[in-house]
Image (cartoon, rainbow, N blue to C red; front, top):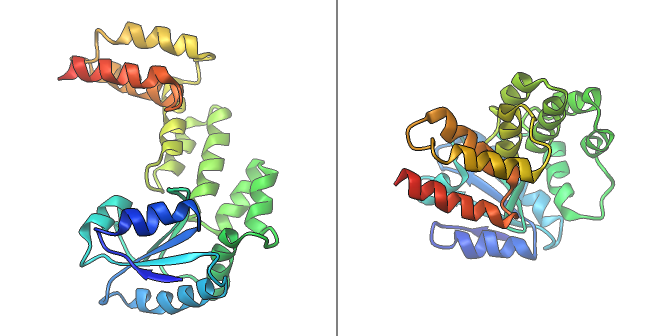
Amino acid sequence: MIIDVTDSTLETEVIERSRTTPVIVDLWAPWCGPCRTLGPMLEGAVAATEGRVALAKINVDENPGCSQAFRVQSIPAVFAIVDGAVVDQFLGALPQDQIDEFVGRLDGGGQPTEIDLLREAGDESSLRRALELEPDNADVIVDLAELLAGLERGDEALELLARIPESPETRRIAAFVRSGGSFTSTQDIDRRLGELLESVKDDDAARQEFVDLLELLGPEDPRTAQWRKQLTSRLF
């Protein structure tokens, strides 16, 4: 299934559709040579899934809103969307076998790839090997950054995260690094947020720490929304 998507149809054709069918988003432009090479290879790989994966093609020249939504800095840029969230991505043209592997990870029922096995192993050497195979694989970068953060190698973790677009996962790991991993419970975080609230308006460091602690608390915790409201009221 191949769909031409515009700014006005992004929500329905990509986000909503991805809740039932994985969607690959191909951001391209007519003047982009690598895009013209990549496009047919992607289309062929998606067609082979017989509808189990959809391909959404977006002309970035005509749809600046989509470009902004995906924070595109260069093309071709390809994103895999499942349940409304980016689960995989790559930049530039890839060989056909890597494209087939990329699509296959969404197709389901396939054999685990070498990247899958290396991520499952989860140790540093395995994750670095996976990164050698796919230097732009955001999942591998997040896995390795989280491992390094837990090993108190925060600078290395932040350097890795800087290579990929910001996401809830990257923000959480960066917040963990900046906090020094010193908070062992949500009660400790809650207490510290209360201490910081008086300083957030005039103290940049306090404001950054406050935002980092909200990332550690997590969006699922009902206190996060309450603290965000209090932060907004203090700032504005």
